[in-house]
Length: 225
Ligand SMILES: C[S@@+](CC[C@H](N)C(=O)[O-])C[C@H]1O[C@@H](n2cnc3c(N)ncnc32)[C@H](O)[C@@H]1O
Image (cartoon, rainbow, N blue to C red; front, side, top):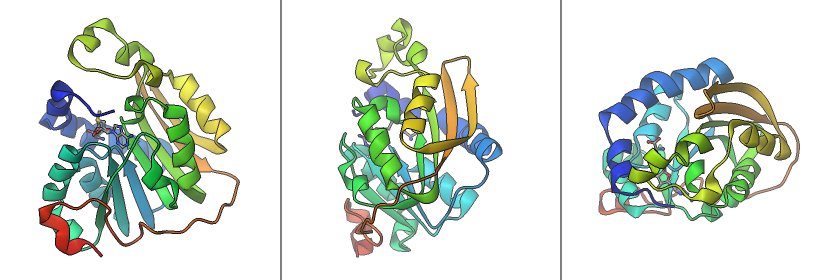
């Protein structure tokens, strides 16, 4: 589900960027170590600041950003124009079933506070887990039911009620998806992190997103392979 105007303003603010750069990425690394960097994905990449951080902190070969909101992708496309031209960043317009991600394999998948926007979050988590290659990792920073469904928060932003979950529910779901938990962090039951590693299962998938964006904006059309 797309974010409303208030939340869009917040996710594009310096406060959000400060949190992501100085709290979330360092904490991810502290609790879960370094990601596998061959082929990285971010679900709900918004205007692309997280993708930039992933490039700067972890230096992956390529990063694929997925978002349901074309306006966000347009911003990301402008923000990361240089990296798109260099074929280090690819953008994709996603849907609530994560159909684009589904038919692909990644060495690491990141969620920076986007799963609680996806009504069928269990199915989305399953699709994301399936897209992680054997021995690959997934990093999740999420907001939990007491915060997303709080009456005061609901005055300003809209989160789908079906996508409300707790820290332990998220952990249980990750385990169901054959993920080993290698790091976790719970902030008062309001928000938290998991870093998990894929432990079993082998399904051959093509890598049809390996070298091309499926979302194009005027600024990155030349990057389309
Ligand atoms: C709260 S914002 C977070 C944006 C950014 N990751 C950040 O941390 O600032 C949630 C993002 O998830 C995106 N989103 C919601 N549903 C989605 C879906 N099914 N697939 C991909 N992105 C989705 C929204 O458009 C939005 O950009």
